[in-house]
Each structure stands twice: as structure tokens, then as C-alpha cells.
Image 1 (cartoon, rainbow, N blue to C red):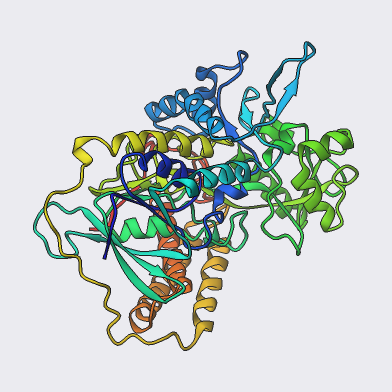
Image 2 (cartoon, rainbow, N blue to C red):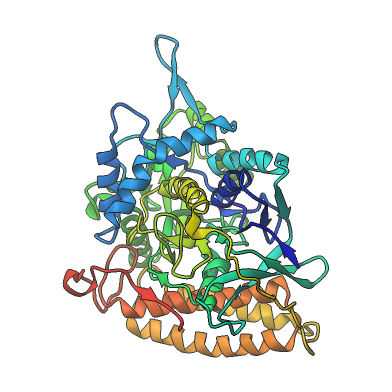
Length: 532
């Protein structure tokens, strides 16, 4: 049994930046189920929303965030995260993260700020259109050099170990985690009183997503099974503009393209967003996604388009090199042709319920980044607030974990080793893949951008059956990464459906035809679920 001061599960911006700070005060193990570079962060194109311009202000950023969140944002969380953003960004720049700059007439340089949907000012710091990759690489370089941090690649969290599960009568708390070593197939026991989830979101619960394959909701599922509260899982953000092409099914066309003047048009070149929102193509994401979905259904078209051909080719190639090269690789020249796009599952606005120090409702368990629900996003995330939240909460959580109230538990616990019993190797992998595909298809068809109670109930019934099948499979066979991801997907899909059924109104990202209006009298509150 290994013992460390801090276990961080996940290797995105939240997990890596948190680990760097914690390593100054104790031993850190980072658990990552693929290579450390494989994270949602590395796929982020847009940037970090942060007030750095004299033309901007905290109050404006706060107002934009509250407007996008459709009444459900926690005002204290919004003000705290927005106001602490500049400090977090400076920390990034100190370890070598670069952001694009522009040269002024007097030869001075300043940050080249982008604008995205829902923002009243240019405030998005970016590095071309690969901001996430730049941040991830620089953080990873710093982490790998630190002697106090051990990265366990190709390891996946199986379950949290709690005193309650072990039969202790003391306060229920996390005291360790079981981790699958994919190379050996063995499950290891890691002892720690401070376990931090930084596992990202659950985009792979849907058939079409902008997320990488690792986004299977593992952190939310682990926290749920351990008894931590989960909040607002009905609010799944669909990014309006995913490239529509059979060879690039998960490629995001950054919101920054619209921020630089990209127009949303149909196949004939007609703009359509003006009839849906006064901000047109720069409306909040929930509105733009529903508008594109509505236009596709109204016309029978398979996709809509972004047209930014009015901008100079040199500007587009310099500002969006990744998008330009990717589209060019499938025969689309964005300097001369509109880009075909469709909405796709993108971001989980709910998650494991935490306070502003990352503490969950289960002692010893913390969560930061997309896996957590701090109250910042409310019913709909404002573009590029996600990296901001991850950075600020990593700072706040690292400071909190050093407080006496979160110190290592003094009682000695004997943690049992993992016992596979009579479990055998999986003999029919096709069953796992079939159930995986079924979950993603039913979530797309029944729990998508526009919902109905009838569709949600159908999804709920089938997911309950799938949960039983997967649970039997889990106990009968040795655990594998594929099996564990399937279990996570089914769990988070069920949480999304249960939360959506509980919210009998339309608000932000949750839109139901049965209750198309917002009901502040009954539903101006979080949807909290907890397994007892």
C-alpha cells in the first residue's frame, strides 16, 4: 500500500496547477488514466476569460457571467473567481505560459484580447487557437521537474475508500483510493486523507461531442458512489460550432471565430441569429446552440455554417492556425469557404458540489475544475470562464488544504487490499462496446439540446436496465479501463436524466418542451442529488 499526503486524480489545468502548489508542502501522486498530456485542457482553443484591460472591469465580467447563468449563479462564487483571476493568470505566466500580444503604434506590447459570445468586452487571453495546449504543456514541464510529484500514467481511479465503507463508526470520510494499473491489470491501494478530483467532464456520454475520449465523467461517478452531493447535472452545455465532417467528428470551431466577426449562416448564405437574440452570433451558447438546432430541424439541413471569409486570409491563418490547418486537411479553406458546423456536447456545468475552497460534502474529498460545481456557471457557462475557474479554485484549494481542519487524520486505518475474488478476464468485450454506444445514442436522442418528459423517462428506464447489466459485468469480470469508463458513463448519464426530470421548467441549458418557460417561484435553486 502506497501512502502520500495528497492524491490528485486528473492531469488538466486544475490538477497540474494544484499539484505544483501542494508539492511544496508534501508528497503528491497524480493519477491519470492515459498520458498526462491527455486532458480536456489540451483541447481548449478559446482561452482564459480574465479582466486585464483598462477598458474592462470586474463588475462587467461579473454581470456577463450572471446574465449567461440564467439566474442560478452563486454571486459570491462569481465575484470571488472573477476578482482573483488576474493573480492566477500571473502565476501561469511566471512558469512560462505565453499569451498572444499585439504591438501598439508606439512600439509597446499589450495582451491581444479576444471576444467571445456573451462577453461585453474583449477579455479572453489566448495563444493562437491552441491556448489549452500551451497551458497544459508548460504546467506539465514544471510538474515533471518537481521531485515531490509522482505522475502515474495509465492508472485509473476505481473507487474512493471511505471509513463508512470499511465499517468504522467515526465520521464518514475519504481515507484513500483504489487505482487500476492498466499495464499490469492490478488494482493498487493508495492511502491518503486528502484526495482531489480534477477529472474533467462527461462529454463522451453523448454521441457527438467536442471532448476527447477520456471525458467519461469518472470523478462525478466516484464521488456519487462515495456519497458526496452532486449538483446541477441537467445543465450540459452543447457547443454551437463543432466541425461537421466525417473525418473530424470531434473538432471544435472556437467561439473566438465568431468573436472575430464570423457569421452564422445557412447553406444559402443567409444569416439567421438576429431573430433569436439581440447579440446575434455572439449570444450566449445555450441560445446559439438551440438556434442552430432549430434551423436544422426547420429546413431539414444536416448542418449550418460559419462564414468568416470577409476577414483577410493572413489574419485568419495567424489567428487560427490550428483551425485553418485542420479544415484544410479535410478540403475546407476557411479563407474562401464557410465552415460546416453542428452543435455537440461540450461542457458539464454541474458536478460534485463544492465550496469555494474545493471541499465537497464528504470530508477528505475535494474537487476542482470541470468536475466540480462551485456555482460560477449557474445554468449556462460563459465562454472561457472554465479555465479561469480551474486556475482560481486550484489556488484556493491548495491554500485550504494546508489549514489545520484539513490536516491528515491522526487515527490509523488498516486499508484492505483489492480482492478480485473469482472474477475472470472479460470474455466478450463486444458487450462493453455495445452498451457504450447505446448510452451515447440514447443520451443524444433523448437528453439533448431540446428535451421532453417522455424522452427523459424512456432514457431513465433504459439506463436503469443498463446499470444492472453493467453492475453484474463489474462483479463477474476483472476490471479494465473500458469497463470502468462504461460504469462511469452510465452513472453520469443517469444523474443527468434524474436532474433533468426534477427541473420542470426551461432555464439556460435545460430546455424542455413540456415546460418551455422559466419558473423562478419553484426552481430558482440548485438541483442537488445525493446517494444515502
